[in-house]
Image 1 (cartoon, rainbow, N blue to C red):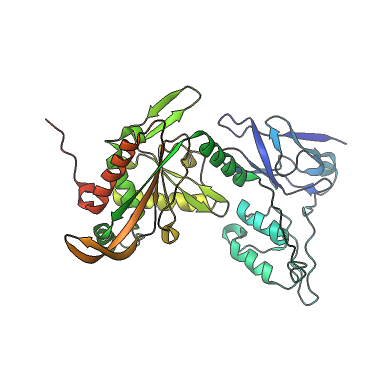
Image 2: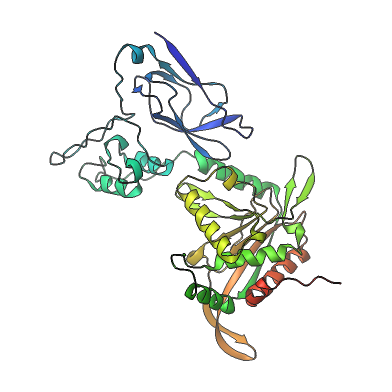
Length: 400
């Protein structure tokens, strides 16, 4: 027997270990070179690890949720069998039994292409991905394929049986990273919350006008890019809010550039892609970049660079925004701005009761480095720009 020991690879950026998210092979299986064998998670991103050689799996090191140090054995192959005879792919799990009337789908003999989120859905639904025909580019399995597979008779054994009273879900992968970061942020950062009411009637009118005159094939403008543009103007006067707290060195790092994180909900959890140098971008450029980054984050294509380096974060729940919220600061930043739902309601405007479009801004600041007065002054300045959006586009006049 000729063995090949594959060790946890160095995934870059000073990574010392990685967490096992899901194995896609097991001892006894025969795999081909470049076949997906395991998904791992670092503090920065999820990574799909392919087999470096063809051979039979002798052993694997670690279960989902375990952390394996870089350079430690990850999986051991018997490569002699691959050299002596033809290689046959064995599925990591047996296919669920199909109903008598359903024709079985032949198992694949190559690498199954699917995102980590769709792989997780398949595991939870008891669907063997090797039996699913992918309709995406290059045969990639997409969510619609899983929905179709789940709807087939016999696709999910026991679905009509008694439902257990509880379900245990191991906290691993991105959800574990999110849990750890949120806990650390709330435990170590004294949050100061500030909520302000903003009349966005004029801003909404501008947004509608921009959409009427937008270039053909350009996606419609939302309020978020306008808020980001206004925020970059405000930060020029409040640099203490566009900063990092470097706890290890005991320093506060203020940034001249506004690298705005956009909190984005994805199938795998909350991610924060970054619009870099937002202060140098036009409205439509900001909108296009937010859209591009959100799509890459949701499809697990975002790079580490696209998901790190923000200096202040904006979060929005869109139509689910509610009246107010208390967003958690995205450490090591010192401030986060939350957009709540914009609704029409009667207000007193210029001495008369009229219907205006109102939205609350919910913000949180690190009270160690941003005083309450400065936090309120910053949000008031942002409110001024949003209520009079023409000011967003007028250059500041420097004092002589």
